[in-house]
Figure 1 (tube, protein in one colour):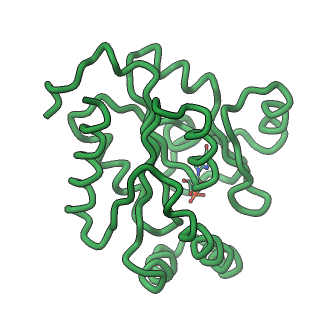
Figure 2 (figure 1 turned 180 degrees about the vertical axis):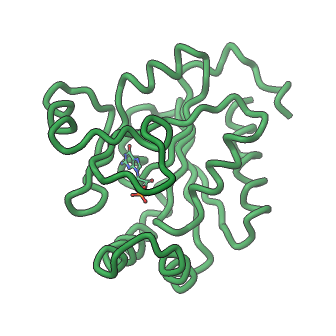
Figure 3 (figure 1 turned 30 degrees about the vertical axis):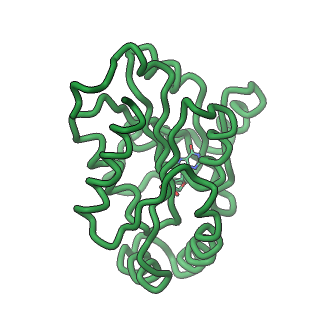
Length: 196
Ligand code: 5GP
C-alpha cells in the first residue's frame, strides 16, 4: 500500500482522529502509528497531572497551567481547548513545524472541537476521522472499566461523550468501532486513500 503514496505530497498534511472519550480512538491512533504509514504523533501540551505510565514529551508535554497560559498569551497554539473543566489541552505550532520539517504526516488524537477547529484552518490538507462507538451504553461501560478517573470526573466524561456524539456529521469520515480489527483496517485504508 505504502509505495502508492507520493512522498513529495506529504508535507503539510494532517490526519486527525477524534471521538468521544472511550470510543477506542487512542488504540486506533497507536495502531496507525505502528503501521507502515509515514505518520508521527502530534504531542499536545496539557495542564493535567501526568498519570502513572505516561511519559512527558511522549504522551503529552505536561506544562502546568501557568506555562500554558503564557503560551496562549504568546500565540504559541494552533488550537487549544478546555477539554475538561480546569484541564486545558492544545497543539503547539512548534510541534507541527518540528514534524513537518521531518517530512512526516502529523497524526492527532484530539477532542471534537479541536478537530473541527483544525479542519477549518487546514481544509484539504487535513483528513478528519470520527471514531463512532457502537452505542452510548458501551461507551459508558468502557469509561467505567478504564477506572482512571474519580467518580465526579467519570460523570463529566460520560456527559461530555454523549454531547460529542452529536458532532458526528461534522467530519470527513466516520469509522464505527464495533470490531477493533476492522476499525483499524478501515482507518488505515482511509489514510492511504487520503495520501494517494
Ligand atoms: P486524557 O488524555 O486526559 O484522557 O484525555 C484528553 C482528551 O483531550 C482526549 O479526548 C484527547 O483526544 C483530547 N486532546 C488531547 N490533546 C488535545 C489537543 O491538543 N487539543 C484538543 N482540542 N484536544 C486534545
